[in-house]
Length: 114
Length: 113
Image (cartoon, rainbow over all chains, first blue to last red; front, top):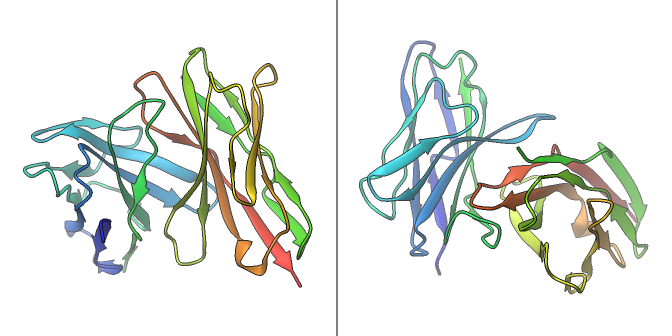
């Protein structure tokens, strides 16, 4: 079955460490997205990519980095520069960016700084 | 810039009753799409229903319908005959032009027996 796989489901990070969250899709979607979810905040866009080897910053990109070397994969690195990284991270993919295109989401990664 | 407002942090409904979750939006674009997603406690986001700004009929998907009032800029989700499994967080979202999806802050729905 086609879908999006995020791993790990839970991740613990020590302060000062970089961590990478994995996101893989087999839906043949061109566009991929990373959102951050905090309690009471809804979903906020971190980065998105509409094509391989290209990506754009979202509303809260500071302290994060991404790469898009393959169509299927869009990993997110939470760097030590991200001051408050504890949150729920959701990866999504879609056929395009625009009014007609909804997204398919992964099951999320819960990151906790210890 | 586009904005989604969900004014109900939480809603309660009894099983088998209908419930309406409110959503208002703001955009200067004439062409846009409105979406509703459900997020159970497991965390995944499940697509429920879509309404295009030029669609003349209100969208329906099984027990879900979208009450689209363009002049009021509202896109309320109606769930008929609520079930216990409908207890979840519900998000309204919008995309206009070539923009990415913008989400509201969500409404927590609890369905009681």
